[in-house]
Each structure stands twice: as C-alpha cells, then as structure tokens.
Image 1 (cartoon, rainbow, N blue to C red):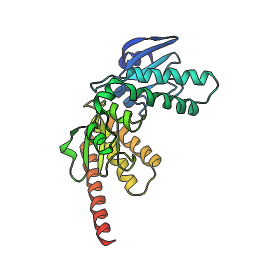
Image 2 (cartoon, rainbow, N blue to C red; image 1 turned 60 degrees about the horizontal axis):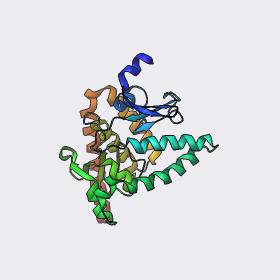
Image 3 (cartoon, helix red, strand yellow; image 1 turned 135 degrees about the horizontal axis):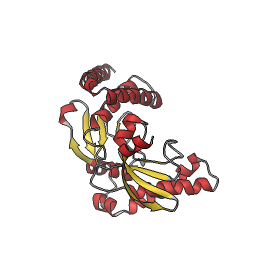
Image 4 (cartoon, rainbow, N blue to C red; image 1 turned 30 degrees about the horizontal axis):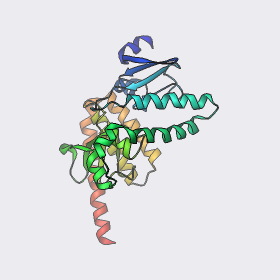
Amino acid sequence: MKKEADTFYLKKIGDRGKFKIWIVDGNYIRTNIEEEFTNYGQHCRFKFIPKNELWIDKEYGKDDESEFYINVMLNINRFMSQGLNHKEAVRRVNIIERKERRKSEFFKRSIGKTNKKEEEIKAVKKELIKKYSSKIKVWIVNGELVRDLFFLDFTEGGHDKAYHFIPKNEIWIDDDVSSNERKFVLLHEIHERNLMSRGKDYKSAHRSSSRIEYFVRHNPKKFRKIILNEIKIMKSFNKLFVKNKHLS
C-alpha cells in the first residue's frame, strides 16, 4: 500500500501526541479503497488507516473544520483508552462537539441570534443546481453550517426522505465535496431517495446506493445514462404521489 499511499497523502499538518495528522485525497480513497470514508477517519473506524495517524479529507468549502475533526478523533481515543466502547465514546464526543461548534466565530457570524428554522434553512443554501432541479430541488449547501445546526454527521449529501431537517422534495450536496465528485454523490442521493420512496429502509437504500455509486466511480461514462434513468423514476414517483394525494 506504500506506493498507493503516495497518491492520496496530500499534506501533513501537524502532530498531536503520538498522532500524525494528514490531509488526504478523500475522492481517491472513496474510489479505490473505501467508499464509506467521509470527512475524517482513524484506525478505530477504518482499519486501513495506521493506528498513529488521523486523516482529514481535503476540504473544498471556504471554511476550515479540521480543528473540530482533530478534537473529535482525539477525544474518541481518550474515552476509549478509559475503557468506553466506541459507540459510547462517540455519544460523549458528540455532546462536546455540538457545544464547541455553537461557540465558533463562524457560527455566530452565519446565524446571529436567529432560532427560526426557515431562516436557518435559508442560511445553509448556497446554489441551486438548475440542471437537475425540476420538481425536486438540488442545492449545494454550506456543509459546516448544516453540521453546526442540524446533524454532526452530515457528509457529502442527503435528502428529505432520510433527514427530517431537509425540506420536502429537496436534495442537499455538501459544498465540501469537490466539483469532480458531486455527480457521484448526486446519483447516490437520487437512487437512495427513489428506493426510500418505494418503502425501503434507510440502511438498505444506502447500501444499494453505495454499490451504484462505486460502479459509476469506476465507469464514469455510464453516469449520464444511469442518472437520467434515476431522474425518470423520481419524476414518476412524484406524479404518482400527486395523483394519490388528489384521490385521498
């Protein structure tokens, strides 16, 4: 793996105790090693990451969340070294992270004193992707603000069938995702949303979407045909929903 590592290690940004902290090419890792790798990771979550390293995906948004990610990983290690299991360590770390995010200058600057959900929703939206928006709106959103306000584990993208905070008939794509990778994330979200519209549970829909995303990452020329088919399915669900609503 050493030769391959030369491809995805981008920059060492420091050391914290025994840990070396690296910025890595998440796109490469998701395509070639592990599709579920997201904003950051360490050995207790991803066994391919060396035990003494903390990895942070290269960010494409304007703001830097690396300090949050570093603290999360260090605190998880601290709690687990005290005998807690991974699940309980994550639960405790989430409480700490929520408080820290709400104290950040970025959060105060972006939200101010508002506590109205409609204003918070408006604040996170950056750009409508018109090419793929008709009945369903596809938005590029400020991923950091979504994590600050709604869900710490929001990564890459999401939709209204999976997340209660996303408005009806919307798909959100994190602005931390590179422009080259957005199409794969969009396909994942549309396919997942279509399956959940049929009654599939989130875990099953997510597994299926990860498989189709992985396939298209390795067969990018198939993207257009596959996504157009998924959009056609999505539109048919919308028509059926409207028809049933009128009949009820």
